[in-house]
Image (tube, one colour):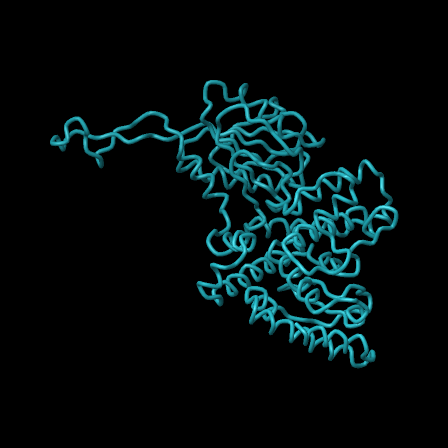
Length: 440
């Protein structure tokens, strides 16, 4: 630790020409220290590509999106102007790793491009990360700091989306100007603006998002494999929880989810010679019985979403191919703030085109309110909701149906929390992504 503080002091005294080399030495020593004392962070940082900062970068360090990976950008001049100790420099390295582990750069790539949201996103993501760190730089944003600034209770160690919702509510009440929010606080408060740059997240709105996400998953898989069993066992709970999906749970295939839903509801029994007759097992000439599964499927298409007619037709066509195997009755209904039952139609066993009829806001509760009327007497049915995921935060189920949400946005951006049923994002479907690219 003493050597890192000494490295920082040399960087403070160094000339502009020497600062890049001194920064590289400081970073190398920091990674070596973490490899010895906190190997999870050390292994992640040792695998990150470090690139020189641009003249526009004002923060000491930050993540930047490339076409294939996330890279770490260090700004020697900004780093030399900090009053950090060695422990605080290590805290900021850990801070950057947690941003990447929790997918903050990709989750909020679009939001940081909006001046009215950039400051709030920085607050929310930094508070979510810093609550798990110690030895933070002065004025670092934590949930406690948020509570002081907002003058209301803020729960500790929450997901960044929780903090962002609370901040947006505060924003609406305070009517902050775009300039104040960009700076990062009310009345020009500049909490944490110099510590960690988020401007590089803006580059993550391109078509390489899936490639970068694969790289990120492989990065943490490799790090987890490099750790010993003892090291993995001593990882803090918040890191283990984030690593579990990366290590054990592959992305959901929406077609597999629909197949599982279509095969769950019993609809009587049928004879099957491949099964023994339970009442007379010695009579091989008597057939047994198997449960016959079929059901009604109600598909609700969000008319206000970002899906075009061709994209919706593709999804309905994929569903139609499942009907050759599963004898289900599928009816499609458009909806926005209400369900337009007059424009509902039966999905046949062939692809169909859909013509839009609405285009207002989005109210998911309208779908659930219509279910007792549309599925009267058949409560155990499958409900599929095609949507961009942006609507109200809470819905109230009205029937015990199986619900599958198909989102055109990432699951992390879904407004309903918690959502009844299974939530699947189409962003991992290569055919869907290829179709979307062809429309742009």
